[in-house]
Amino acid sequence: MAFRSAISLTFFSLVLLLLAIGSKAGGIAIYWGQNGNEGALKETCATGNYEYVILSFLATFGNGQTPMINLAGHCDPYSNGCTGLSSDIKSCQAKGIKVLLSLGGASGSYSLTSTADAKSVATYLWNNFLGGQSSSRPLGAAVLDGIDFDIEGGTNQHWGELAGFLSAYSKKGKKVYISAAPQCPFPDAWIGNALKTGVFDYVWVQFYNNPPCQYTPGNIGNLKDAWKAWTSDIPANKIFLGLPASPEAAGSGFIPVADLKSKVLPVIKGSSKYGGVMLWSMYYDDQSGYSSSIKNYV
Image (cartoon, rainbow, N blue to C red; front, side):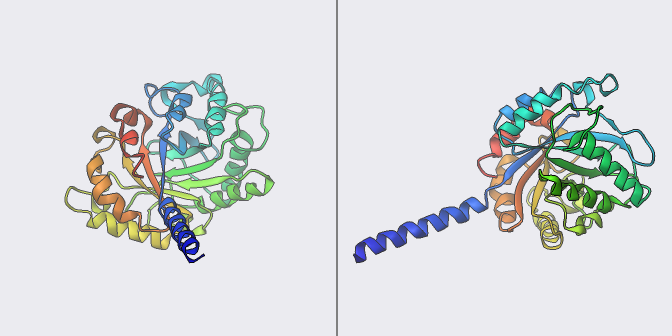
């Protein structure tokens, strides 16, 4: 009897250990849509490397502008040519991958001028990309899983209200996930206030093109300090380490696979908010194979 109890106790301890290890396992998020040579969305999801795919970008919206999606060479939204992506989106979702639409980008035309403007944009997004109804859905009938905020210009006003309006649509059935891609200097100049609302599920922080807080060979201190600030002060469910998928994908901040595995991930995985790694972008990842190299370590 005592022998059996000892075995049970050992087995129970092993289960707890495996659960503890599993809880630190993260996923990979990838941005897709800004290079026509990166392959089809369906192919991206078929790799099995990604848990989140972020379509980029809805680059024009707000301030009375007609919202317009920009998916580079993939399709022409002006001729309603992006509706064919609906089947690809559904294919991704059938694999358990969350597909989100990113607002903004580095070179878009966007801003919110008032609470009413934020409400109007939220209504548009619900009806045209999420669970609402519209005769002019740019990506067809597929219902996206959520909205991403990659705000890098305009003003820093009303983004929290937009996020709140979007999150409230979760009450209509399907959960609307809200994510953001702030720069690593804390707090973010554009959506720092919005991130304090507590409605963001995922925050993939851009630890690149920002030398003061990114990794440099032999020095993890700046990244570690910034990571601590983000995971301590932002009430999001999960925080992700945003990286370029190759040295060519950004001006600075690329982390070689060996350094990521041995020096960076062991440090940031200690946080209960660790969610994984975000990569910019599918085109560069396709060239470098970065996600395949890190998947089993994230």
